[in-house]
Image (tube, rainbow, N blue to C red; front, top):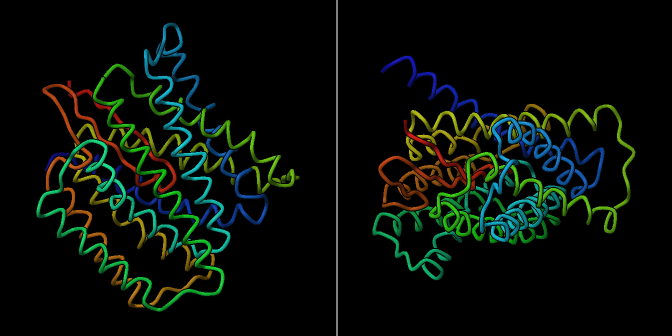
Length: 320
């Protein structure tokens, strides 16, 4: 195994750890501001971080998304305004580990929407992955929910549907191969984050941010969104989408560890078993066919709804 590939694996592990920390840091941020405000500030700030890179690469000298502005707006609306907005809101009532686990279920609605929207039928292996996912979810939630958690699960479930729509829209954009990577990442961030900032004052009290609050927003924007997204993109130059997603499937377990250390959250053995089953199921899912991934001779396109552990990037990597 070459040094370059080892470096790519290390980058993938770092991305997994960064994105795994997102629900934990968001929970910490909710002590300083309301959820929609936090989400809007995070994603619009990440857009501002990426904007100079777009300018430097000439992305604003001509139309950076010819014919795709509506789709990019809808992607931002689904992934950030609705998807992450509901996630941040739901984390008021859920442990960080539960939020991370729920995000790992995104392939479920993607599968059903792809069947309806894109006429893509699942393979036998993907059906087995679906059944394993259901089993892992049953194990995770077998200890039961506290009084407020059903509300949080329901709200986040709405966000999962929005993430699934984002993935389907992203495939349509990627098929055109007319939008460069940076605009494809930055513009939905700007649309979705900007909408959240417009909605937040209407629905929430205006926060008075402390130094800690600003530090959390900047960390989430710069490290967990912009830096991790670019690192994810770079690691895909050496790793396949399946290999990288195997590393990203460690995120719920990493979130559980971080939440235990930083927030004092506890997980039961059955929840750990459920997370392991889900991770294996998603790996099998990806091996079952093209899934969320497709490519040509020179370009591979991969849609990663994981981040998202609250990032949800559409990546287009040129294989030179």
